[in-house]
Amino acid sequence: MNEITGSHSHSEKAAGNCRISTRVSNVVRVHVVASDGRVLNSCHPARARELIRNGRAQRVSRHPYTIRLLGATTQEAEAQSMLQDVS
Image (cartoon, rainbow, N blue to C red; front, side, top):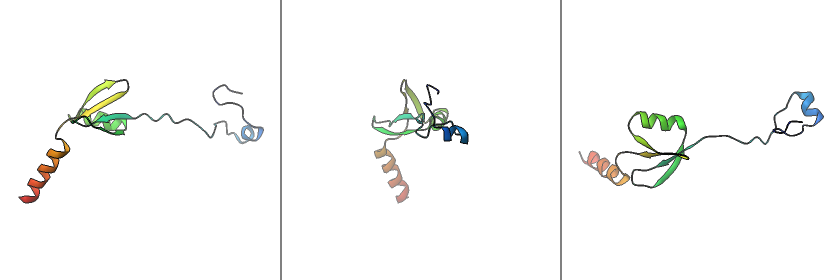
């Protein structure tokens, strides 16, 4: 018996399956805040690093790791797209 995985039945040990099926997922996500302060969906850490490296976001806090997107707000982006549609 292992403290982390708990006890296993004899058939599981015989089959070589020592991992529990109800494993807790350790998925790490980065919190994302829009430039206007709205909370957005979280993203994968690699995506957050890419945004920071490209100058499209900045780190706000380390615990929990949070980034703030830089650039135009949604209203400004809509206005720009409307201007591009006209021209």
